[in-house]
Amino acid sequence: MVSVARSRSPRGPFEAAEHNPVLTHRSTAHPVQNVGHADLVERPDGTWAAVYLGTRPRGRIPRFHVNGRETFLADVSWVDDWPQFEPARRHVPTGQRDFEDDFSAPGLHPRWVSPGQRPDRFVHSTPEGVVLGHAPSETGEPSGLFTRVGGDHWEADFVVDPEEGEFFSELPRVPRAQVRGRSVLRGGTGERLRTARVLVSFPC
Image (cartoon, rainbow, N blue to C red):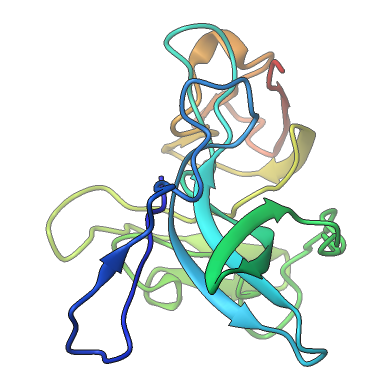
């Protein structure tokens, strides 16, 4: 939830709004929950907006949210010098979500990240694609090569050669019951170049 207080000086004293919280979705069926951390922004045309954080829980109880806290937009009007939050009437373009990567570029696209180690320290380019080496993080925790996918329904196709090791396609922070396909490819079989597919559908 978001509460507000105002003052003529940054040092105070501050006066809290009598109608606090000015923004909350608690105990409602609104698709965006856990709202908070709002920032007020004046647009070039003189109107005001607020950007705030929230989650989009899915599934049955206990519910889950895959993307963590996301950024949302609300319109703001001023009444008696207090901000009034309203549903945003403008839409932020989502852009292109689909992508295809044959790893032919000299370096990895910025979409590929690793939480515990820089990807360029364990990913090496080859004419056939990329080779992933051992990727320990500085804390000793396992790491790997990851990308974030937007949308509620998506699928991924990839070709891998696990050689003598193993290749896992994982979907972190998603209950396994919601995953319609999951691949584990093991090497040393003589036919190592394999195609794997992951299909995911999140319930509304």
